[in-house]
Structure formats: C-alpha cells, structure tokens
Image (tube, rainbow, N blue to C red; front, side):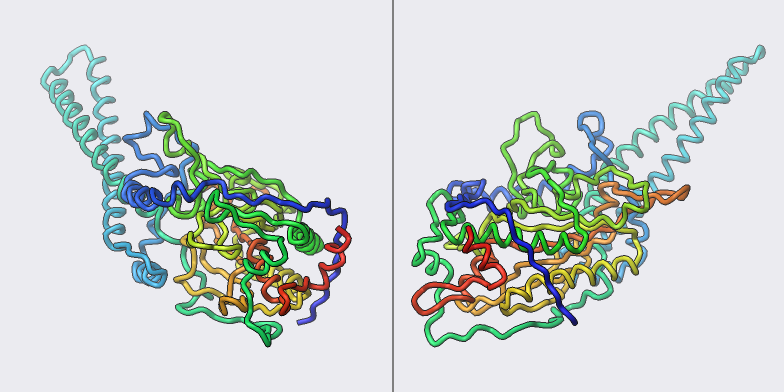
Amino acid sequence: MAVQIIININNLKHITHTLRNVAVPFCNKAASFSSHAKEASVKKQSTSALYVSGNKATTTFSVLSPYLDFTKCFQDIGRLEANVKLRGFDTDVRELSRMWTELKEKESEKEKLEKERTSVAKLMKECAKMKDKNIKEMQELKRQGKEMREQLKSITQEIWDLEEKAVIGALQLPNALHKSTGEYDKELFKLFEKPKYDFQARSHIELGRINQELEFINVSPTAYYLKGRLAVLELACNDYFLTNFKKHGYLIHSNPDFAKAVIVEGCGVNIDERVFALGSHESDTDSNLQYLVGGGSLQAFAAYFTKQVISNPECLPQKLITVGRHYAPPRVLHNPGLLHAGQSTVVDAFLLYHSQAIDEELLLNEVLMALVQSYSRLNLHFRLTQYSAQRLEPQESAAIGLEMFSPHTEDYHEVSRISLYGDFISRRLWSLHKTGTSSANFLSMIHVKVCHMSRLLALIMENGQKEDGCYQIPTCITTCVDEL
C-alpha cells in the first residue's frame, strides 16, 4: 500500500497551561453510581425515552417514535440468538419473539374489532333514520356496540402491557452483525516494531511528573492538567489529524456537548453506563433528561440528522469531522492516568451514505487509508484489529480499532476506532435520504474516532522516552511544537 502524507500545521494559538477536569466529580459519586446503575437496569425494562407506550401517551411528550418493524428480525431466530450469544448478552430472544408475535396478533384483532364496531355504528344510524324502526334490532345493535367497546378496552390494555415488554425489549436488541464480524479478533496488519529499551520503561504519569507537564488533582480520579510542551503537543496533534482528513474531503462540523435522552437511546448507547447524566428536575420525563456527551461523539453528530431527509443525492456521501470534547464514565477509577481518562479532546468523523454495500466498502477503504496515512507518519508501532462480536457496542455491526503499544503496561490501547452501524441508528432516529420521486430510504452511518487525544499523548510519551526521563516527539509534529 503506497502511503503519501502532506502535512500542513499552522496558525496554532500558543498555550502553556490547559485544564482537563472531568465534568462529574467521581470522588463524590463513585460510591452511588453502582447502586444507581442497578436501579436503572431494572427500570429500563419498562421505560424508554425513545418509545412511549400507549398508556403513557397522554402524559408524556414524544419527541419521535422509532421505526418499528421487528418481524423480519425475528424471522431468523437462530441468527438472532447467535448474535446475542456471540456478544455475551443474556437476552431471552425466543420469549421476545413470542411477545412480539402476540402483540401483532392483538393489534390485528383490535383492528378487526374497530372495523366491526364501525359497521355496527353505521347500521344503528341507518336504523334510526327508518320510519318503521325495529326496536329489537336497535337494542341488539346497542348491545353489540357496548360489548365491542368493552372488548376494545380490554384488548387495548393488553396491547399496552405487551408494548412495555415486547417493543422496549426489542429496542434493546443489538444491531445485526456484519458479515465480516467473527467470534475472535482479527489482526489486519501492524506497522513498525515495538520499542525496546536498555532501561526500565516508565509510565506516562511518571514521565509527566519528571518533565512537569502533567498534573493530576484531587477533584476527581480523572482530573488532570496538561502543561507546557504537552499542552502544545495536544493542539499540534489536533491540527495534524484535522488537516489530514480535510485533504480527504471531510468538512468541519460544529457539534453540541449535550444530548437529550431520546438521542442517546436512539444511538443504542447504554445510558446507565456510558454517559454522564446531568441533574434533572422533578418535572422532567425520561425523554427530557440531558446527558453530557461532548461534541466529539456519535450522539452529537446523530442529533443533527434526526428527523431529517436529505433530498439532494449529490449531498451523499456526507463526510464530516470535528475537534471536540468526549465524555464517558471511566471504567478504571484508581489511578487511571491518561489512558483511562473520563474526558479527552478527540478528533471525530461521521459519514452518511446510501444503504448499499458498494458504498460502504468504498468509504471504509477511504477511512482506513486516511487513518493509516496519518498514524504511519508518526513512526510509532501500531496495529489494526477487527474486533470480535464480544468487543462490539450494541449499536455496532462491525468495528476496527487502531491500537498503539504501551511499553509500561506491555499492552495495546485503542487510540482510534471505526464503527459501522448500517441503518440501525437511522431507523430509530428517522434519518432519511430521497432520490427523485422514489420513496425515502434510511441512511447508513459510519462513525470514526480518528484520535483519542489523551491516550495518544500518553503513548507518544511512553514510546518516545529516554533514560533521563525526557521523551521525543514524532518528527512530523516537532516543528509545530517547537514554534509554539
């Protein structure tokens, strides 16, 4: 594969002291987070911000209602069970399928009853207009009408009860697996050699302390400062990746840092584990809750295209990129360092395209090329890995991670990720495209975490370290850092 990179880093604002402070103070909330998650996991079985069942429709405002058609999904029950099993989920697929089938039968029965009731009401009107009224016939029609009304009340309640189990349960099912996703990770390729030292490799935390460029504070386990050259290095890396992807046709996009619960759930993200919830008012409903996700996130991009129709085919594919914050509750609370920080600057990309395999393959190859070009110029060891089903998020059908090696932990850490969703998210959030006079179709999506900056900075420090505690910056970024 021929690799050619043109770098143009300029106009970076000088900064010597950058505060990185996680939005939610974990020291105060870590203890209560586990119990809250348990309570929420029970609650999420019967409530949803994305879907409002019939019995709550009069008291809850619905921002949107997802496209609900799980019949095809349940037709191949064996494939669905294999999907759930490979991902390591504990979901009774057959019970969900049974409830969904029962729900559809009840809805058909209700529709039939409503037609019959309409016919009876019509006959009653006609009978009432007749001069020679048949009293017995009128009484019989009234009796039938009352009986049907009671039957409709009863079946409507049954439908509502089934909706809270079948529909909400079906919405929690994962995306269908891509044909390339397997049971085990696949290493696609690796570049450069792992670093070897004649001394004991230090951690980035120790290197940051020696160079007085990294400071962790007691606000929370993941609150930190970047200082001096390290702060400038972050800015230089942001511009480096942003410039590279702009040369591949990506347009800069500005995203919000917050997202409503309906967007978060629509993206298939686990609200109880993967996002920060902001304080809510007692009058707030599930769909009104706000979450801190950061402008560099899938939810921030998806919100922009929710309930939107792209009617001009020349606008596809959409290739967008942004530099923003990314917030996620860290899974390591004890001395997490930059590798497990709860927040970080990220360079994030988002692609929208027609739901065709040929478009997906072409775009995926373009993304891979742009990533390999960008990271190979750093001259640091990395590998590309296609993740197994168990390492996927529920909304992903496939994912490829670019991982760099840490000499201190002697393990690989993900700094970039390509996530394929197909039309899984667009069906839930109504993101559509229309060509000419044809009917609208759901868009397919790819999300690219181009660079998770806090991890990259940590790994640049560890891979470029010297015996005296100094570290070397990749040549392609050195000029910019020195100038600033």
